[in-house]
Image (tube, rainbow, N blue to C red):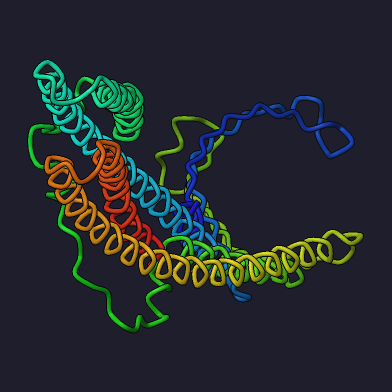
Amino acid sequence: ELGLAKAEDYPTIDLQAEVARQHVSDANGGRGQDTFSTFSIAGSLDYELDLWGRIARQQESARARLLDSVFTRQAVRLNVVADVVTTYHNLRAAQRQLEIARRTVKSRRETLELQQARQAAGDIAGLPVQQARAQLETTRAEIPPLKAEIRRQRTALAVLVGATPAEITKQIDTSGPGLNAIQMPRGMPSALPSDMLERRPDVRAAEATLIAANADVGVAKAQWYPNVNLASMLGLEALNAGDLVQAGAGTWSLGGSLLQPLLYFGRIESSVESAKAAREVATVTYRRTLRTAFQEVDNALTALKAANERLNARRRQVKALQKTLDLAQRRYEGGFTSFIDVLDAQRGLFDAELALAEAKRDRLIAVATLYKSL
């Protein structure tokens, strides 16, 4: 569209070759035998003078619509990037939770074996053994849903990056530290300039649409004014084809035309009103896009702050529950408390570690969301 609009700056040049056979009637002075042929080869040039800015406004509109397409593409790309980051963090979090579950299963299997040994030695009754077995099976039941979640996230990631789940599995190293190895930003600036939002692709796309709509109003209004065109022709013309190369066969013309609209029965008025209505819609869309941008940034900052606080609280919770479990085990081994206290501490620590992995994931996603909103 922009290329077509730019082409309006240049004249059109045509080459025409014509052969005609003509008979002059008696009414026009002929004698019934005035039949002849004409041969001509000519080049013509037509050019419209942009006195009222119609062509310039068309180019402005086309340029803005091109930018609208570019910025819209950038917005789509940004959304895909954010989805990839979010899905990747979900995958890493599920893998981390699976590691925690497997480690906990191993620990509770050892606890069960210890209780069974104590029962065989006659130190305890059968209840602690059954409680340890129930705790072990409860933890084992957490593993299949986590495996399913990993498969879902891996498939979603494969779709987003245009690969197969098998390719994603090969590309992602699952043997490393995983979620804990992802570096998180240390902090955010206390103040962010509002003009940063002007760089958002959706804001720039809405602005380009508004510019195009405003230019379209100028194009519509230009229909009220006359079109001025210049035309010229230079060529050869003769009654015989062989005479086209003679010196006297040359012909030329030069002229101009002016076309002034008179009665269009409301067509131009409707065109102008339609362009103005489109401009109003673009104005409202631009303002709404700006408000949405401010809202998304504010929500992202709030979510990041909440994610930081939740992550710190989960870390303190895990640390406290680890101490609780150590204390409960020592008290149980010393005969000061029942085995149920140890099981409660193990259960609480397991749930807290799973929640800590989720908190780390949410913090990473909050950073990605803030990046997207800015």
